Image (cartoon, rainbow over all chains, first blue to last red; front, side, top):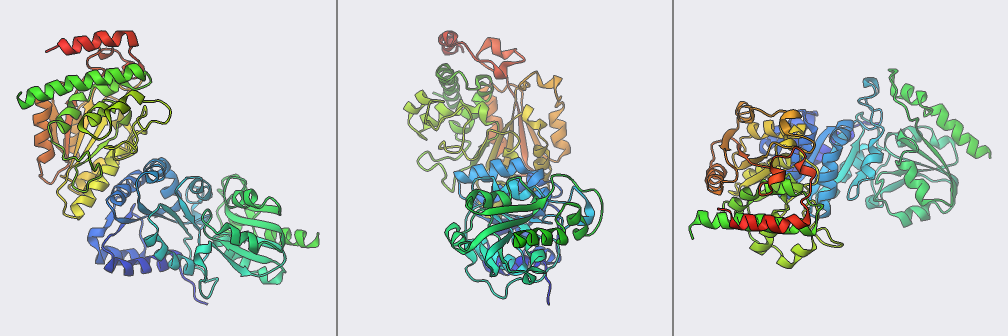
Length: 306
Length: 275
């Protein structure tokens, strides 16, 4: 089966839009991708590299957006969110309350995509801090098809958005996309137990989910999903396991579900609140944080045996 | 009345009205709002800026970003006088439900951005300047910062960016009053020599020695804002924090001091009678 990186399908689609839509600007903090070279080559006046300067990345992008450009802002996920969080808060979240702006923050390297690079490049806080900002839509796709489909919405919705892309190429989890604006996809039907996961963790769960009688729900709009449809979907579910590649009990996916589905039994799986310096594969880093494949299977079996 | 005399009268007017606001709302930052009075007067009453009170976000306006927002309460009487909002609103500064806060926000007609936090205006201004150039629009971007504010590293990211992209449609005005919150700036981070720093960063540098001589301020601002030589421009305006209130003018803590309401009427008389 074909594997692709989310950023590639997204950027290829965006590149094709830039031909007709002269209002698209692309701003990077010296972070690239092969397809970005094409954007730079074909649209040199609408491609800006601000250098290694994330605060200015946000501020310059805000200025462009205030003047009516649709701005795509690009850097490694921990840097585009945490190095310049106050710029995002003041100039995007607060200011967009008063003035319309279409600004799309693209962070590459969700969770521990960059497993080998250690704590500076592990991004385990972003879902929490971006989700807490008023006016900020948080998009956490689990495959390249969702990433590609999102381009249309970014152009249509004149609001700030945070896009959390995995760094690694992965399989598609869906043949085609229906009801994209629902914000979630039921990837496997089931009764009693449902897993609600986001991003790479949905990929991980789908590797072995078929061996169990459970539902798998991929939530990709963490704060813009259709609540009543999700409620309906969970009608025949009594227990939910949330799984995220982010610190648990910190306001991320787990908080979203715990707050809104108080009538269910909920188990939260996520990273332990510590930094991992030990180098290894993604699965190794997960296992160090009680999030390895076997750990998740153990949790599922515990629920099923009950 | 000559143009310069008109600007002098308006400077007095703005200073007096600012003190009146401070009397009603002692939590306003009065010292920081009094140092840029002549700058505001020159920009607006001198018509260096193109603005439209009936449509504050008119596409053909010059974009003026007041990055040192808290230190611009003196903009309130000026904007009201020019028709951006009703003069009666000045009675309500800092009261429940008003749009005129202790720190101005872009819900106030005439304000572009959120200003409560320092070090944001120049980067946002750079993005706007880039956008205007990209659309071949002739409007100017003018950004006002304080000198203490230049301690923020985000400014220096923007300073390098603006020079790299030759944003000669942008002018930075530094209200160089040399007092930060807790002390004189020289005892915290000494910015000397600010003009040399900006020259080294490839900016075109202007300086006004006496920032309360409204003629000098007006003439220099006018020249600088309209100059287009492929370089962003800075005007270092040497000002006095708390100008018009003698005890504030020399006080290291002027930023956080208020003027006693009882003293304000006397101060207003003194300002009225001054040359």
